[in-house]
Length: 360
Image 1 (cartoon, rainbow, N blue to C red):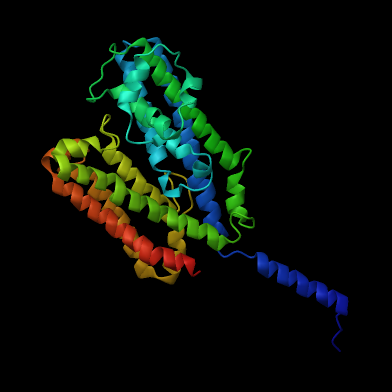
Image 2 (image 1 turned 135 degrees about the vertical axis):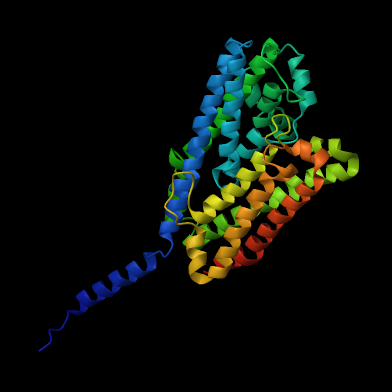
């Protein structure tokens, strides 16, 4: 004869099973991988590389005629830039809440304002740079102020050509940028622990795993849209209004000729989130692992369009070695072709991916 289960015990079993069902997550592996191995890993690289930028610019300041130290400072800027551009597929949370983005990556640069500061007498240090805020201030600091001083207006700056105030400005901007990247990293894995907020997704910011996944999908759609409809479009509009030089004036990293790399790593940030891999980090649990189980054709389409966009950017100007500025003079159609590839990707993400994720 079958034993009867006491009523109270039966209630306890039902309650336990109910709780387990409510807390079971279908996509925790995706959210945790993207948070820890993509987002946090990228921000950690950004902060480390920003530290190298401070070190190398300080060494240059102490020995400004040393060509090797100028080369090292330029390389450190490029490395920090790579990590930053590879983070633009997830511009949500602390990077937005703490105004990190405008304080390190405002464009266009106010070169005239920088010249005014350099010709003045006020002491230039990190505290001075930190106080440059708002629309009138952020264009005087960050990545592009550092780039401008390291490479010069025409991109041909040489060692031994820096004034003492330029060197002070350079190091102060690098220190201020490093402070911003440290704040961003701390907000995710330090005192702010925003990473836990994302992974737990049971709070006022993200009340479900679906809300997190939608944020991630919107993030990669957003940067794709910014690349084709802002970063590239601004140079195209400038070209049509004032020729190649008009396009160059709208080009973001023109002093260092890093513009193509900027765009490429923006789309690589899309790839990283979608495939769940960042360099040697990540286990492949990205948005693709969700989409592939629902619509394998869409998954293949997105992967193909990401790669096509990256390649189109790389060969702007007809070759990987051709700069964006050169392409504006010699192969303008390749810029429009790259814009079309990125626009196609953004359209797919907006009309196919985001709705699919919204309906999970």
